[in-house]
Amino acid sequence: MKLFIKEMDDGFAREILHWKYSPPYDFYNNEFSEEALRELLEESYYAIVSSERELIGYFCTGKTAQVPIGSQFGAYSKDLLDIGIGMKPALTGQGYGSEFFGFILAHIADSTPYKTIRLTVTDFNSRAISLYEKHGFVKNLEFNRGETKFITMIKE
Image (cartoon, rainbow, N blue to C red; front, side, top):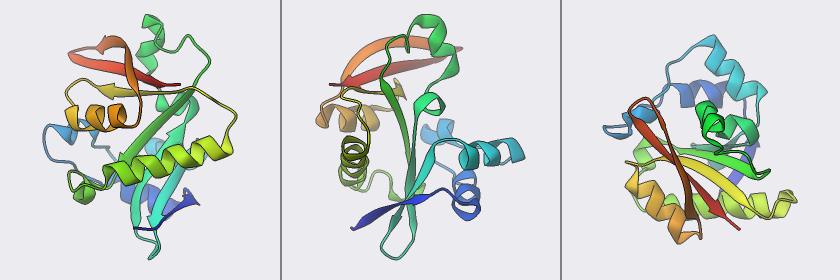
């Protein structure tokens, strides 16, 4: 599948905000709101599309990729590039994750000066953790937000 990065636009943002994942991944479901729409459009979010311009997923970088409460636990004390990703629900668990994530990592390597990348994932998301480990990420720190445990992972 040939992938391309596009600026986030209103159509892509609205589609993402209406994605619905099956349990237990429904934790990642968004509620549509004007505030959520503004975040996708005004922060560092990018759409990943196929050659047919079908929305495949997105990624974001910087503070928008962090879980805010993680700062209280020192999760983001080092100056690293944080990334966050999301893939269209219908495509998850279908074997596309490695190509999708590898494409994002290659883009980041080519377009930023950062040598070390950090991401944050829920501890129950074993599919994602396995994918990240296959791409060289290692677990770094854990913290809780309520009953949800998060793990930061780093790739140097």
